[in-house]
Image (cartoon, rainbow, N blue to C red; front, side, top):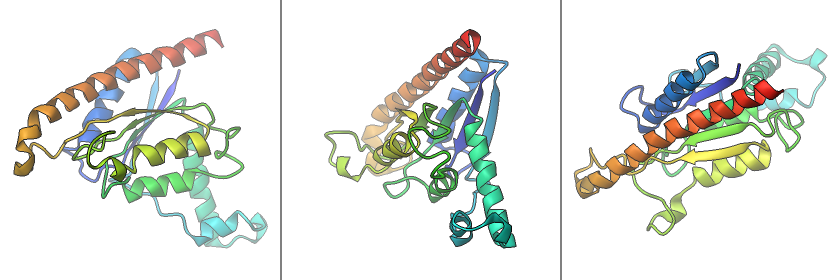
Length: 220
C-alpha cells in the first residue's frame, strides 16, 4: 500500500486552479490505487509556523537543556518531517503569488528540510517522486514576456532535486485570471485549453505513479 502526501497551499478553499488540479490527481490516484492512503495537509486552512530561532537553535544545543519553546519547535519539525518521510509520493499545489510560492508553502518547506535528515542526496526522502501543480494567473513560459519573473518552478525544482534529492514533475495550469480579468478576455480559449491539459495530465500522472509504486511494492 502506497501513501500519497497531498499538500495544498492556495488561500481560497474554492475556485482555486491548483486545488482543482490536485483534487483531480487525488481522484485518479484513489481510483487506480483504492488500497492506498492519502494524507492531506491544507496549508491554506491550517498554516504551519514559520521557522524561528527556537527551532534553529535547538538543533545546535543539548536536548536535555532545551526550553519548553525549543521542545515544542523540535516536536513540530519531527512531526512534519516524519509525515514527509512516510510518503511514497508527494503532491503539492503551488499557486503563484507575487511571482513565487505562497509563504505558507515556504514555511512548510523550511520546517521539513532538516540538514542531516531529510536534506541531501542521501537523505531520508531522496528519490521520492514529487508532483507540483504550479498554477498561475498569466503565462511565464519560455519565450513569453514574463519568462524572467518565473520563481515557482525554478525554485521548487532546485530545492526538490538539489536539497531533498527527490524527483520532481510539474503540471502548469496557466492564464487562470483570464475568465475574471476583462483585459485578458481574449485569452480565455488559451486558459480553457491549459486547464483541460492540466486536468488530463493530473489523471495520467496519478495513474502512472500509482502503477509504478504498486508495481515496485509487488516486486519488493
